Structure formats: C-alpha cells, structure tokens
Image 1 (cartoon, rainbow over the protein chains, first blue to last red):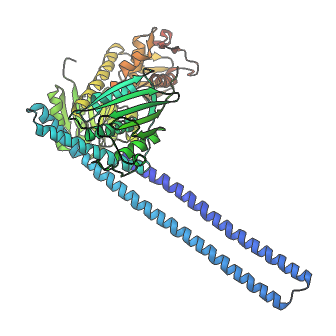
Image 2 (image 1 turned 135 degrees about the vertical axis):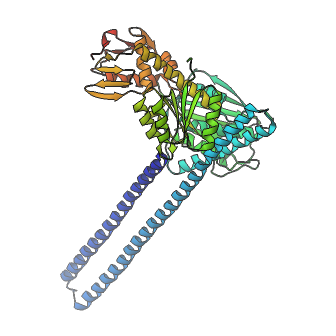
Image 3 (image 1 turned 90 degrees about the vertical axis):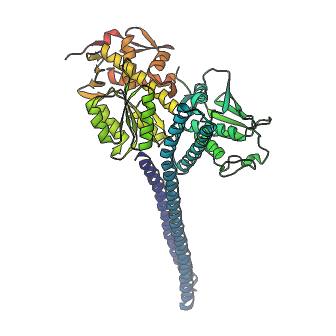
Length: 318
Length: 241
C-alpha cells in the first residue's frame, strides 16, 4: 500500500541519518583513542630522553615512570571504554525507543484508518435518511456526531503522520477562491456561517498544501461551533496582502479564551472550557510552520477567539 | 448527454458500495458496482464506462494498478479515486496516474457528486474532440491521436493524460487564434482544483517538450504576452497513415 511504502521510506531515511551520525561518533571516538595513545607515547619518549640528558635515569626512576605510564594507560583506557559503552547503550536505547514510537504511531494510524470506512458508510446512510425520509432532529444529531467523529479521526491521523515525519506538497493556491469554495462545501459544520472579506489584491496566491489547508480551517470552524454561544455560530475571515506574506484572520463569536495565551498550540493543552483533546490548535500551528508560515492565537481584542494565519506569498510568472 | 453517464463503482466494503451505488443511481447515473479489481475488469470488458470511481485498497490489488489497466483498455474513461488515505504523497500519485480527481473518505455525497459532474464534463469535452479530430494529427514533431489519447514522438508512443488532451483540444479548436489562460483554466480544470495561471504555463511547457523541435524556441505553440497561447496553423497537418 502506498501509505505503508511512504512510512517505510520515512523510517529508512531516518535510520540512514541515525546510522550516519552513529558511525561519525564512533569514528571520532576511535580517532580520540589513537590520538590519546600517540600523545602518551610521544610524551613518554620525550620524558625518557630528558631523563637521559639530565642523567637522572636510574632503574628506580625508570620503574616509577613505567608505573605512571601503566596507570595513565589504565585510567585513559577505562575512560574510553566507558565512553564507548555509554555511547553504544544510548544508541541502543534511542533505537528501541524509536521502534516503539513508530510501532505506536503505526498502530494508532491503522486503527484510526480502519474507522474511516465504517464512518463513510454511516455518513452516506445518515445523509440518505436526511434526504429521503422526513428529516428529524435525531438524524441531524446523528450527522453532527458523525462530523465530530470524522474531525477526531482526521486530527489523530494527521498528528500520527506529522510526528512520523510525513511531508507536505506545497503549491501556489488562490486563497480567496479556495476559502469561498471551502465555505460552500468543505466546512463539515453546516451550523457555522462564514463571512469572507478580502482587502486589496483580489486573488493573492499563497504557498500551501491543499490537504493541510483543509485541516487548518476545519479545525477553526469546529472550534467556532464548539465554543459559540449562539445556535447558529458565525465567523469572519479577513484576508490581507502584506509585502511578502498574506495574512488570514479568523475571528469567531464564541466565548473566547482567558487563560495563558502562550500555551495555546502546545500539544494536548486544553483550555478550562475546552471539550477537545488539545490537538487541533497544535496541528494548526505545526501545519502552518511546515508551510513556511505561522499561526498566532487569541490575537484580537474582541470578545471571541481570533486566530491569525500568516502564509508565504507564492510568486507568479507574468 | 442524452443517455445517462455510465459509472463503474469499485468498492469492496459492502455497505459503502451498496449505499453509494443506490445514491448515484438516484442521481440518474447508470451504475455498475464491482467488489474487486478482477470483477471491475470483467465488467469493463463488456461495455466501457464514462467514469470509474475506484477504491484504492482492493482485496486483489490496488486501485492505482486497476486505474492503469483500465486506462490501457479504454483511455477515455475518466478516473476518480476514492480512498481512506489522504496523504499528499497518495494524492500526487493518484493525479500523476492521470486521475481526474481524488476524493478522501469519509466524504459528503453532494461534494462527491459535484466532483463526478466536473470529471464527466471534462470527459465530454474530450469525447467531442474525438469526434471532431477523429484522424491522427501531426502537431510539430508529434503525431497526436486524440481518440487513443496517445502521442508518437521519434518512434516512441506516449500516453496522454485527460488534461493534456483537453489543453491540446482547446488549442486545436482555436487554431490560429489566441487562447486565453483563463479560458484554458475554466474548461480544462475542475472548479475545485484551484489551478493558477502558472499551472497552465507549466502544462504548456510539458506540451512544448512533446511537440516542439526546439522547446527553448517554440514555433508551434507561441506565447502571447499577458494573454495566453496561440497554436500556429502551419504546425498542424493531417498525420501520415
């Protein structure tokens, strides 16, 4: 399967790097041993020569000097052996830990992935029910919960992929057109209304990965739906072109955030009023960083929660 | 289209396959559901389809391999992948195989339907081109057969993707006149693909490598600064049999 191929390629690349660093370290250690031996040998020869010149080279001083040499050899040797031993132990520990982490990530990704097929079936059937039968609040709730579950699955998979070294495919994207289309069909939360406002240039291009953009904005919409005080939540998206970047501000009408702002975007950090798992904002931050931009949270002075996304501008050929 | 478009759904999960087929049939498509690659190939052998909706993970092979086999048999069939894998690598691989689109599970049915309609719209553009340019054409140094979606260059036969054929068709339709970048974007790309004018330029570069004797100094496809491209009528003639 292509996902497995890609994971294997990432693991192999990482192992190649580790082997290269380990080989370099061992080579350095070997160089240190040889250099130490040579210095000791040269010093011994020099001292013996000086003793002969000074006429103090008696069998007693010679014996004492040999004893000191043996002591230095033993101490130095023990130190180097310990250093090599600790290095090898650290390498083994690192490899074991990495294998365990990889196995856990693969397990998490595979379980989450397995959830996608039944979820597809549930959504298809719930949508059919909503369209064919008389739509009841029960079906609406079923669809809402399906969306929530889909969001969790998407976040867990993306987290496992990013932590496993997964890459993005960056391309120039017309952000305004993309957001307009996103508001029409990609939000997954029908109860959130999005108002888009673009200042300046009509179609600024940003450097982004389409899949990553989807995850970033779905998470923001999900947060809006979760923290809104009104039944029909609303968020304003403002796009501004800067000299070498494009700023997208997403401001919702929710309850806002009153805690420690610097901790927003830290993995597994949850605000006191948050019902999430503490993954959404972390993913937004990580994905924005990987796209060469940044995400700043709670930047507005208003009552809701405001996120500012800064994208790199993509240059176009005239 | 006067007859309903024929769609081949290849999905091994019974609940997903059945519900999807029923919902597509309710949208007035003629739907055939296959649960494996073997079954899909056997169905396709009987009658070609306008569009194949392929699950990537199949019990007897991958959807990517099946797409290759389907395209070899009937290049006009538009391919849309349906998959639980949504990584950029998978998406790029699917689109590189000449797929029209790549839909990640779980999906919203309306969204899927919209994408299928777009893919079918582009397939229709090609079908019309086939009827109009039924005989192979010599464009620059390449012998282009739009019906078989092939190009023959220096004795080597290369497969053309749906998009390459679509852009070539547009250039041929407007032979001698200027074709604006925006028109190419509107007609050859789907609404949800978000191509930029640069995407068109890159595509033209690829076509030039195929048909121009010297791609660095193009004579067949000329750039019209700030507007688009123009296919020189002198570079097009009926191909020798």
